Image (cartoon, rainbow, N blue to C red):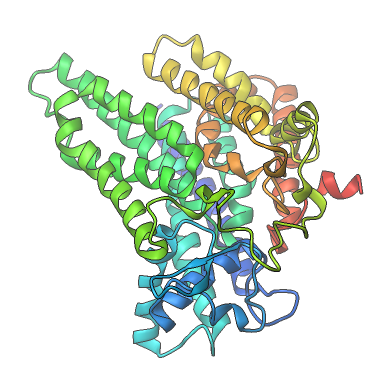
Length: 453
């Protein structure tokens, strides 16, 4: 019996390795073949060009201003703002929060020091190298952690393999691995923070049962704080996750939370605001400067005032926007129908006796409702644009790790009959299709949207 269990475990590990390796190899191939339509750069859209511009300007020009960078062929971007610099002159800047590009500027500086390669003369080599380091390697960690979770939480071979297959092929995180974006680091941070809290909770329960068990390591609190802060720093809606994360850690261990978790979280928060102040002479990020008299987006030639088109015009109807956000052309559930299984998994987890499962399910559902309500009911028409030209509703991508975890209970349920397995595999196939079609350019409309045009 033990030999049989070991054999099954070894086989599962082999399947995990094949799924992860094939996914990482495919993502790497897309990075190495990435090229813009004009052939000048490996960039895909105004969104990633905006971040690349800041990285290049910091290292090549020693400034956050992208005045010179934006004049290069293939580096133009509509995602920029204009305001006066410390010299009193008007300058152009990326509209993206500067913390993440500042961190990546350190990576670019190191590459330049070691190879003497610059964005101006070797944009393909530099950018592709950075994408492998910045996106592919962290995605490898993400998939390995998911496989470890599947092995620990799953109860059946099919359920465990289904979860890893979904993570490796069925979500938009793999699609966006070939482009510089803020959603990939945010999603990975959410998973890491969640795992740290789960481990802290587990060790608390063990210490209550056995006084000889050691209390959670300080590093778990530190990593949870950094990861939680970094998730919110990259994806502002993830601040809701960071808030609930902080409350959970405080409830589990108040004193270590104050000593280790809070300082780690504040470290990221301080870095976010300080880099913003250095870049813009303002504590608030560019997207907070859109009011009359202080509108950094309103300048001659600005795309956002007078030149908007397509989805960027915004959806006038809130109900229509909600429909397409959930089950329409940018639908969270229509493009990635495995999340319908996760929805069932949430209901199953809420009925479990383990309070950790109940809390995770409640948090996942609450965060989803909060974000959907915010984007539907509290944003003006100009912001109801589905995230612009993008292959999915990207403002929910940071929640993907939570919805993957909610597959665990239902994936084991699917394994009980062949019909259930077939149904689950069909949903996974459609999800994989949605993630694969825009793989050549993540910044393109979803296939459902294109069919309707």
